[in-house]
Length: 53
Image 1 (cartoon, rainbow, N blue to C red):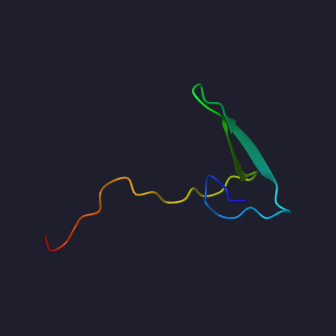
Image 2 (cartoon, rainbow, N blue to C red):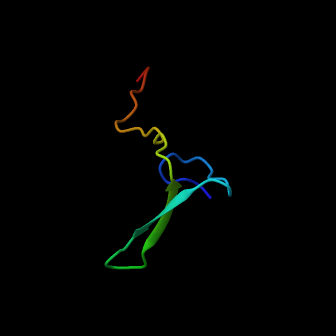
């Protein structure tokens, strides 16, 4: 199982939280995160600058 917050594996012996996301137009979604707050995975928020163009 993969943590939705940090994208790291959750081992069987680790505590985890189940988070349900209901959706009005389709089936809901259930994600799992570490019970103890983990560091979020880095995300690129702007376009990378292209060199040599």
